[in-house]
Length: 436
Image (cartoon, rainbow, N blue to C red; front, side):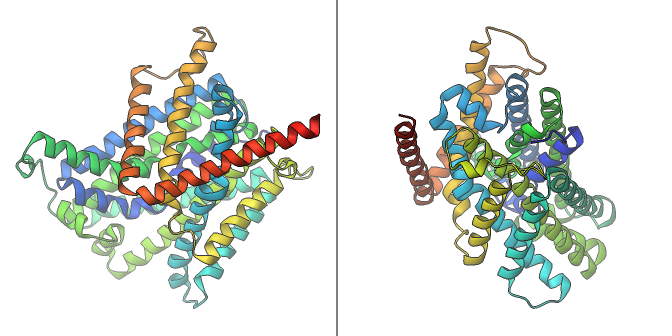
């Protein structure tokens, strides 16, 4: 593959990988759990700090091991091929293909009313996946240009909501520190804990930026800079958007709203404002879809290039210099999910396991620092080991909370990983027999 991506590309890829449609809905869930304006805003700031620590962890990993495949390569080098194999296995079968399908369906739901067409939403969703897949098959530059354009439009759309909420719409009652509503410190900590779950899920997926290390110019410097710049931009966007919602709706109004962005824009511009939001959500979901199709196939390619999956997945087109088969397979599975509707529970199935792999990647820093015998690198995690341990602790708390809240769905995700272990053992035995 050809190294064509720079810092700006990776910054926009990070933003595109994290910001989907959640910022248009999740703040209402956080408000319903935290109740007070200051506490709601504090949760978004705290979540941003945790995400920033995670970005610093992945930045050091990329600087120490600028390997193709990102987290897959870090896990392979730290814990061996079996643990590494399970990451792309569940990305391909559930998490990234399912997220791609969900984004495509959300795009269809918001885009169709804007056009006035009465097509089957499933056809539009599949068509969006096919379009983005074809663009990415043409080359990494074409895929990144589309992704960058959609991210820029996405940020402009969210920026319009922020400006409308802060400067144009009539302000509501931004509730202050109503500590009296929390009967004890334990009640306050409980409110913070349950509010942080949707916040941290909204900040997730910045880890995917390292998947394109093999197509990045000077990755030792570029990946850390793009990752951290992207996460800092996301923190600013999320905190400002949450404040804009609170400024217009107040904590109680935000908690009661199912479409806070539309409510803010309606307050600023009337019915036309809701149309603007619909367009912003459609662009945002299409942007996430584009980023997913750009990033995930790079991990499948690396897995196959290591001999852990069918060799055709590692085929690079001599003309476009991208893993065409891996991209096409990702698009095909996502299109199947989008056309059948079977994707709806996928995020619950796999969410806890995605976080677990992030915790394992963070643990690998301890492994690499020990192996490197104290050698410094271009970027190192500030306040390590305490900051790294904090990140791992938060991730494990999310894993436990997800399992407690969705025990059946999380168990299905576990079954997928067990199937991956069985596949890996059979594959390795077959490969050993062929070699003998």
